[in-house]
Image 1 (tube, rainbow, N blue to C red):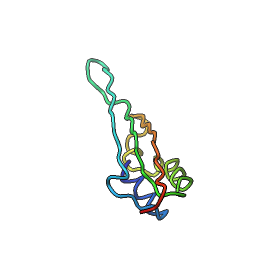
Image 2: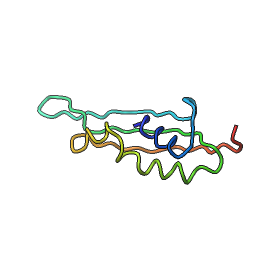
Image 3: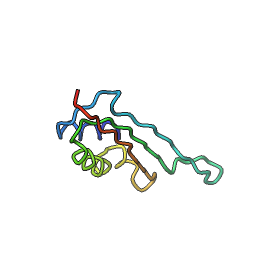
Length: 93
């Protein structure tokens, strides 16, 4: 999902370095018939974005899940949740 989000941002001319776009991912398993089954993935993005780009970034965040091949592959079997901490730089470096 991180790659899909980064691609969506680049398509909107928001370019972030590897240090400016990160994700922490947690997989949650449930035991079903004594077998651990992945049922949920939680993604927490941390984005350090250029000043004035928040609206564009928020639109990309809203839409990226529906365009992600991994999320589409897991649909119906694994719930994918995400949240984002957005830090807007005061000056674009």
